[in-house]
Length: 163
Length: 173
Image 1 (tube, each protein chain N blue to C red):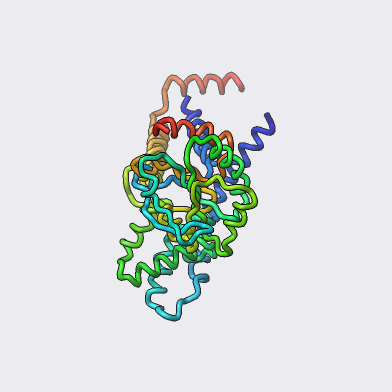
Image 2: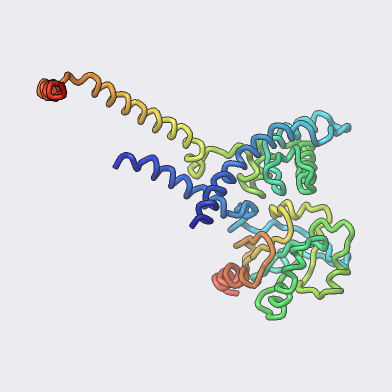
């Protein structure tokens, strides 16, 4: 039993850890890696900007721009080639999602399966606000209630008895 | 009664976290399922003059097994693949992924080959077309050339029985 409780608590802590890790990885990794390509700095810049919002599929909490995994290198090469061939950014994104799914996108698209993901925070905020409002109103109603004459009399009687 | 609401809400949240904790993050759903297998034409390992294309397998249910000589878990699944090949249940085609040192032929000569043919994807471009993220990965492709299932990671006897067998039966193989 104790073991189970400990496991459950560990599970909670671990469940929260990736959020922190994702935040850290996307922030600092993006700009540092992917050495600028001397032959075509313009395409390189476009590629890095696009790849910062894409997930490396090997080390899943890193961006495609920042990862040193071999597959990430291959995918950067592929993005570069496609851009050189004149493809637009959305076309390159389509190319990648057709192969790896929406999982490569750090900003998932807004569609029925992701409604809860995108609207969840708003829903929770709304629920919290509603609970807050109801509690406040109830408290105000209690405070505003006029004192009951009968109860006051009973209290006075009790006080007198005490003396 | 109302006092229980936050506790119940909290327990539901814990339930979601617990479920998430036991999901495998490597099991990324493939958008390729129920789509035609991407076409390619690649030279064979050990015989650059010959080539393989998925079109060669039309009319057969077959497995495309992505592997590499440098991949440790591929060696782990090798005996399972050998058994499948020996049973004659289904043909397995290998895709030798990003094998820069071209060691595949040597390794297969040493430990035996479960493959009908092994295509050589040296630069990993065909792998990208199939959405390969690592080795080993295995695709089940049906008679019409559609991808029907993808398995990420080595095939163990259990995985074979629980995941592949039912799918193959469904596809009439």
